[in-house]
Length: 123
Length: 194
Image 1 (cartoon, rainbow over the protein chains, first blue to last red):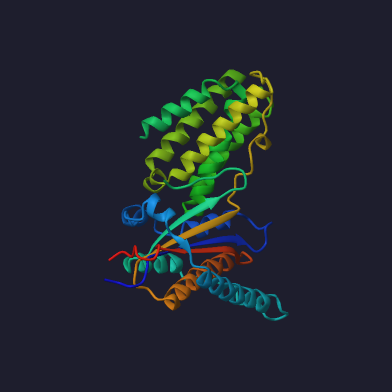
Image 2: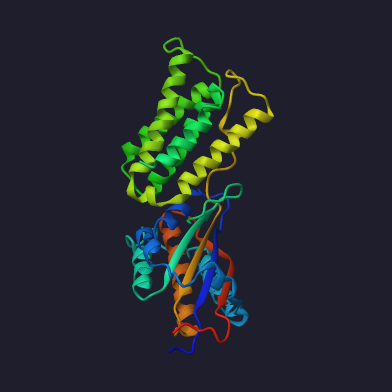
């Protein structure tokens, strides 16, 4: 028996440039292997047990800090004169494969694309 | 075919004034085209839907043509909506996604409310601005982590996901993403899964 609890992490992602083509966000969302998600979501994480979960504030603070630092540093590096990274398409399905490997390891990811006025959620 | 979805949307369409139906057809075509484009589907599929969208929009906004009667245009638009609904239901990936059907139902409900509140007639022009903004403004990724994983591994994986999204976005000529919020919750102490 494990002495470590189950955890749930929710990450809210926005585009850096709000005026950028929002279809890019849709493309990011579509990188996650949807057909596996519906099969493998931990059924024991019912609404009741999910509501019983408590915030892990220490880990939350640490995660926020590390993500912000990494992404902000990269944005700053790219913005510097001569600092732009070469334009290239990412490895095809790189994010897809990352998500798939997480699923195989027992971590399950759901993705919701949220609009300002209309909310679409996977049941 | 998702019969329930088809029946529900047909019921709404029947209550809409004619030009509003055309506006809904254009909106449906736009939504499906957006999804297909995001799935990197063949350009001709997307272009076909966009063309249908433009035709439907043309009549929705009150324009007329000497080559086609308004009645014919109404029938064309109605066919477009039915085609789009059937198309949505037939594509495996979209069929499994509640998002797009839910969004289309919400579009239809919204338009019906607008038409009643503003007392639209069959000839009231309806522009796409009658609908709320369509495009996603943010993503929420929820990761369910089984027991036994260390904090370090969780941080690494969360970083990998965020950076992966950023790389993908930049690789598609975007300016990258930012993480606006993170929520981490854990099982109540003493109720650990085995």
